[in-house]
Image (cartoon, rainbow, N blue to C red):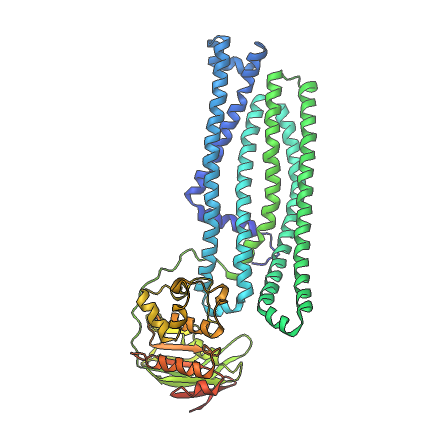
Length: 566
């Protein structure tokens, strides 16, 4: 889907209808019943006013059975009771309506976020890696909330339309000619409103682009601020960030101006229409006073939903492109969230790659990789940046499937159920292992491992973090700060490795996972890992020769080809 297509609202409506299901029909029923109750209550103004000023000649009053059978005082009290009852019913119905709509709004945002994350995960790592961190941040923090707001404005459009249709029906019952005049103005106003809606679509598309650019710039700011401070390049760094923020702010200001203009135009138009209707009702149609008053009250009540309709249409048009952006990035969203299933880890003895090749869009990757690895072996991987080291371990981890060649476990292809069981047998620690703003316990259990405190302390002792964590006032419950800011870089890496050990892996994949440790600390950690019983196999990607020296065997990769072993 192209962002230039104004089909975001149609796609959003289809998605929202599928999400809401029966609750959508319940909400529509409450909208209709609430509007009817309010309209009936307002309609009681006719008999109330007629009784108050005298018998009059209101045909509507004479047609009501209770209006002719009851004495005047009782008739007046009955009309008051009906009016009050209708307004009470209206309040209850609108409370139920608004409560249901609020729940739908909250549930839809949660559903959209979860489905976006599920779709991203189900598409696999090759797809996710192309989106990148900034794109992922923009998707979940900008596009999804804006798409949810668009759905909320669509809800308001439905409420406003229901109110308008019911109130127009009632005014038509009271005075068809006056209603036709009002409809003519409403049609003219709809044409004018369409222009603002189209401008809202253009503003929405521009805002989506500006938010993406701003998110990317903010991500670069977070990642590069430390270096900028150290190098004295903060002014240039902030100038670039200020520029992207300025472009985003310009689009928001433009939309705010257009939105305010639409509001004021609607208010002025409503005042003009009220003036014309009053003139036509008094001087042209000579309506009875009770009918005229009730009609004008109904028309006055229409101004609020009419303005709500216009304003919501403009905002829905502006925000709906965010949903189109979500679908453009991810494709159709997955409705089925995968259920975690406990798979028995694959019991393996030999891993073998035969002429495995995988090429990225950048033309980097592996051209030919052949190796064999026994269970329990520690294999080191060396190579220059971009040589294909990370691609190799991503293939072994099952994140990528070979484009050519074969990856075999005990002579069998790594696919289907075998691949799922293989994933249950490995632990992968990347170059930037994630440490969350949570407690030590929360970080260790972040991947859903079933472990008690004894298990947690065991893995912490294994990676050499036990004494450090015991020194914390809250122990396992101590918060490590944003991205582990309260602990050192080496301690963050130890914590991530400890989390990996809770999986009880038979293969550890460590991609520069000990680079923040000094050689002595690294040697101590690796010795502890190799002393585990049962001892896991390991693949260590490293640049330091001291790290590779702890391995049983070492391979080298140059330009995507395994060229040496030692």
